[in-house]
Length: 470
Image (tube, rainbow, N blue to C red; front, side, top):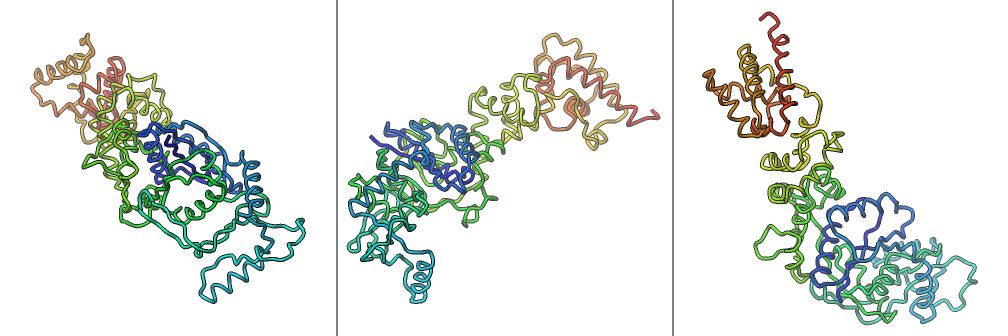
């Protein structure tokens, strides 16, 4: 059975590159009817925080990347790492190193001066009489000194590293805490991980981890190292370009479906297809189709995808995300129309949920704030008698639906012999405060008859402010 894992370190936000890694691991497990494990690699006690863990869990949940097992915390497994380290010592695959920090610094300086690659010289491995065990020591892995380690990377192809290039890495620090490369190996081994998909910044760790796995008699998983994401300019991704938290995309009004679709195309393709729903991603995804060249993010494409999903997703699902944004703005969604109706009215006009929420907040407030320049531009002395006629006509509308509302307004326009454009904007300003909204009949329908008439009547008071002498 295929078993993949996503193993973030809770030292910061869940960034877009990490989210892509999680998605690819999740998709491959689903495609193969396997298991997806969430593992929290929190051994860096100084930098790991509970807040960061919560951000990871919240981001994963928002994206819908549910895990079959976990979250498993490495800090809960220290006893197991301690036992495995002891086993490696007893089998001769690891040894205690008593070298002081000062000795290691001198060694490094000498190697750099000699233009050699800095690496541990195995001094304690050759030490004839080990010091007493009450002295501080680290546990190092005994790396083979001859031959090489090779593996067929799922993304980058065949990779082979000479063992002379590798160091005797530290497995356990002097304070007894295990290191990253050690805990990862033990966890991957005992969790039965079959496929390790991760960023290519980890590629130098892979030969070392393979050596430890072999020393434990464990089966070596298949590795796939994905190129890092680049910014729109082709350079290293910065926070400004999108390296911030995945949850920042939610704040910007991006739908999770849109972000997943966007992420899956950053380094993977299926023909020329651009739009994939979750089921299609699972059906078509293959680790062997992951691109070996870096992908650059494209904010405009994300907005295009987001608008596509705003238009095509069931209104109820979009409405649930819209409610989250409206509530963040301090609005009571129970005081307005059905959110599904708002989605239908606004989705052709908005690229993000945040934009939709901002353009719809007039539906949930008790009073609108008039945009002064819009009022000055669109209200004349002739506006007010027309507005009064509109109010009187709308009072007679028994079925408060867009079509009867539209007919009522048109009848007044016809009776008075004016153009609809003369009164359309004043009506819109009266009920929304500004000049941007869905069509007038739809806007009044969403607002409701009582609130629409109240706001139209309230706009009549503008006459005294604008024309005090007339």
